[in-house]
Length: 92
Image (cartoon, rainbow, N blue to C red; front, top):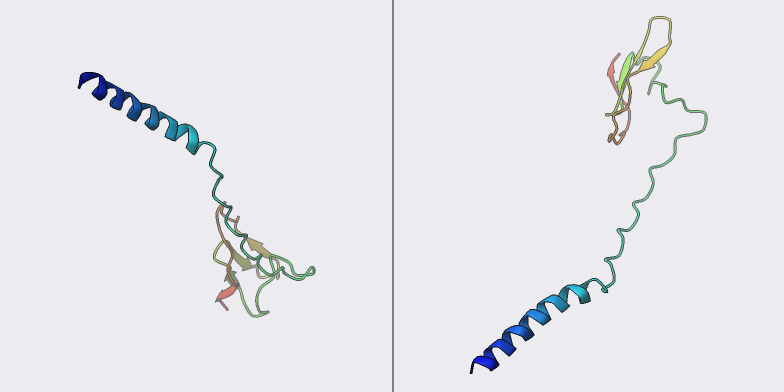
């Protein structure tokens, strides 16, 4: 009975080790489908442009822009993992 038991254990160990080798040859999971790209802004649209002429401060969720009294716009930096949304006016 002893030789049969050791042969059984040897077979189980061999099968366990073969499983890892066989799994390495399996195909990888398919890549995620690409998400549709966001609609591109018009070529003449400035990233600093306000949504309306009366807007003094606006945001797209990533940066905050302000219009100075002389009409010049300045914006904060965009975060590294930020996804811009539609611009909205926060101060008129």
